[in-house]
Image 1 (cartoon, helix red, strand yellow):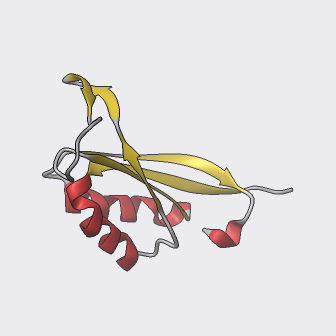
Image 2 (spheres, rainbow, N blue to C red; image 1 turned 90 degrees about the horizontal axis):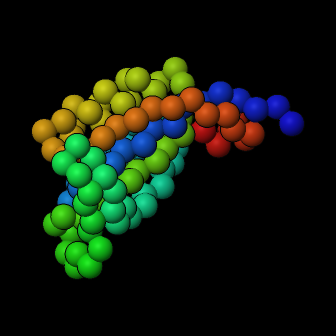
Length: 103
């Protein structure tokens, strides 16, 4: 079965920005995305954990979308412009998919 090259964009962001980022992705040429809760990790300031956090403040989310590679940098730049002053990380990686029409 042939595969098709696409770009995966992953955005680690504070949960308080879920609505704003979802609305932005809905206005861009993004066919879909998935949001995962992020409970712990390690970064430049050491280990961190959001286990037991009961409100949205302090929680982290990971948005994942797979899009046409030709549009990836423009979309990533718009995401960056929206969240640049806040806690977050944006990564882009090349992936291969089977169902080209889904993306």
